[in-house]
Amino acid sequence: MTGQQASAPGTAADRPGGTGDRPSAAAWRNLVMATVGFTLTFWAWNLVAPLAGSFDERLHMTSFAQSVLVAVPVLVGSLGRVPVGALTDRYGARLMFPLVSALTIIPVLLLIPAKGSYLALILTGFVLGLGGTTFAIGVPLVNSWFPPAHRGAALGVFGMGMGGVALSGYFTPRLYKHSENLPFLALAAALAVYAVLAAFLVDDRPGRPVPATPLTARLAGAGRLRVTWELSALYAIGFGGIVAFGVYLPTYLKTWYELDATDAGTRAAGFALVTVVFRPLGGWLADRVHPAVVTAWALGAVALLAVVQAFDPPLAPTATVCLLVMAAGLGTASGSVFALVARVTPQPQVGSVTGIVGAVGGLGGFVPPLVMGAVYSAKDSYSIGFMLLSDLALAGCVYACARMRDAGRDPGVPPGPDPAARTTARTAAGVAGTRRERNNHFGAD
Image (cartoon, rainbow, N blue to C red; front, side):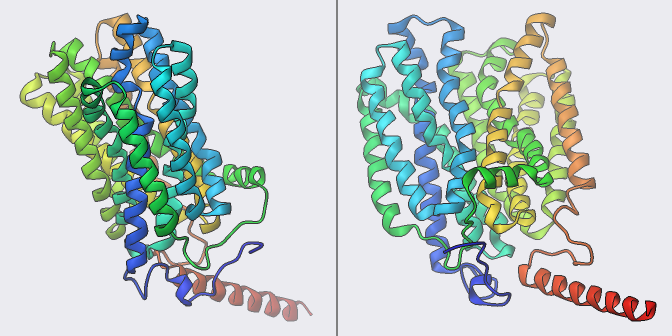
């Protein structure tokens, strides 16, 4: 298939995943497979962090060395979404999902001999970052299979795969305590089974547009789209906030509220669970209300409660409520932003744009913990950090409402998610323009 192939408006291919607005069985099958793959590879992506303390008993790392060890796979996985998303545009999820899942087995098994050497762990963690790239494979797959009226909810369900990080945090240390090699062997086996199943059960939508341009040209083209960076900024606030709280919330609770490590970890896991639950809700709401409006309301709630938390309220009940509602807002915003990606991005570029947006979102989670730690060291308070979070969330709220409601809309084309209607409107607008030019031409004569 060459060039930018697209189906004619009104054909079956123009209604992905089923007839009319109802997703087909194939659409649901691909959604389930994408979510399972996303969950397993994200578990692998987060294998090192829950075991850093156990590795330290043998390696005697400094706090900075532990931070680097944990950060390497996350940073590599975030950046790796850019090329993987572009490759998915070209070769499809049918190839990329089983391939990336199978390749992730290699660093998972390499952790067994590597756990006795810090350098070996760093190098293995670098390759382990591959597991964090499947986000950029699943989004274009799910986006292509589901009709516009159901895409937001479907992408939200797929986004629940980020719960693989929470599963890793809970199960990995317990399996490791039972046997040091058990978590790596068990996950490698699960990835192998999934890779085989994905090779048979994951399908690209028939008639999927396949770009013929080189990878670098497609990435450059996605980078030139204004909406790519607008969506990246919004996702850096939503998903970046989730990552930041996931990394730093246990430290904040132990330092400020003097909780023990177990209690702080349990509360942080509750925060993560709320974000996972509310992500599909954000996508579902985006199908019924404009995703920019959902994003604006969600970030507005985060901005308001971050101000409340900046005044250091008591943990029970005020701070607990504030943190959980902020988790709900960040999870909702993460789901609605990717519903917005599906709405404003040209179909052949969804993978490339998703890669960039996902990369920026992942990287955005590592700036806030550094800021919070630096502010606390300088001022012995977290209030400034929460006020900065409030400022960012408020800026995202205003921008989503003021600018993103019209993003991707052509002049003279009515709003709405139906591609066939938009195509018809564009055609009508083009005919009208041609008639005006013709009349103007004859009038000039």
